[in-house]
Length: 439
Ligand SMILES: [Zn+2]
Image 1 (cartoon, rainbow, N blue to C red):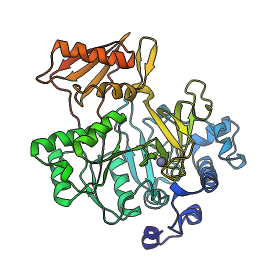
Image 2: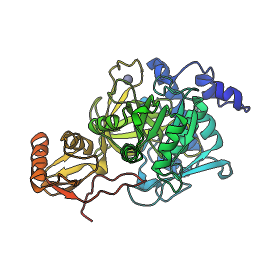
Image 3: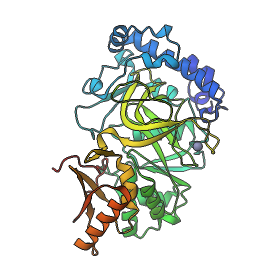
Image 4: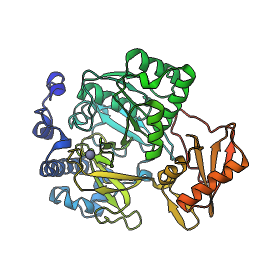
């Protein structure tokens, strides 16, 4: 591994030496047997570490009669107790499994789902060795000739800094740390830098990509003229139709990337665009029935549960993400050997209308297929109807509202009414598109 060979002079952790030290191999094209062997070893290492060094996990394992050294992994991982968001909220040191003085960085949740903060401590080695070691050359086609404009937040949460480290250290790219709507990082300056420096890759959220495109139009910057090879959209869900609109606005292809503060990278979309290949070097993924908490049959929809495989400071074991989806195990035409996750949105954002529940991006897809609908909207479930708020423009009229509602009803079967509002707020934070109760 060139980065490690050049920069790391301590003995490498044995699992890193065994699976990643050659630098020639990449997790996304490993044979399934190698991935399984690596994951079994990584899971055992992390479970034993947590059991030996962390009282919270030790008590839970003891109560469930679990002795990590005796588990047959990965198969028997399902016997290990789940970890929930509520357990770790507001408790900065609960997951801590190393002496406190070796913690070198702590990320904090951005709090979009409400409640107390979640804190995730990392050691220096977690950030620079453990997390950097599993590389994915096919899924992250970034190299030394790339100029990556990173328009994700650098403050609090892990997203901006984690991508920064990965592109710079594991893939050797030039990274421009623009951030996303912070005090200094206005959309105008991000666009100016992308144009001046000749950005070849842009990473941001779907809603910020739309906002940047709106600002570019005002600045008379032709986005299609930028030398971008592709964009990554992450941090928020996004329907294929919104992606298509973003690609049209920018004139460049856009791919999805799925990760979280708690778990880091979870899945990356490939060129075939049929789900997120699981970042198998970093996480082990399961799908459970959220009610019974048991596993579901292969290919069935449920809640995504992740175990982080590389972080020693704060192991995350069988963590309920609150995201809904399923695992697709058939081989992908792109050649990547990792299973794929197909996402259906967050559990808290599921939209209940009457007796039925819908994924927000399923409904977004049908809404955005209507050409008169702009890129900013809100869904407000109201009993047996769905109120759709849209930004009005010169064409907005009661007749248009009724026409959009009836086309939406026709394609989705969901009773809807449309209300035009003057503007829908653009935020530097995560865009909230589902309002579960009217404020
Ligand atoms: Zn693929």
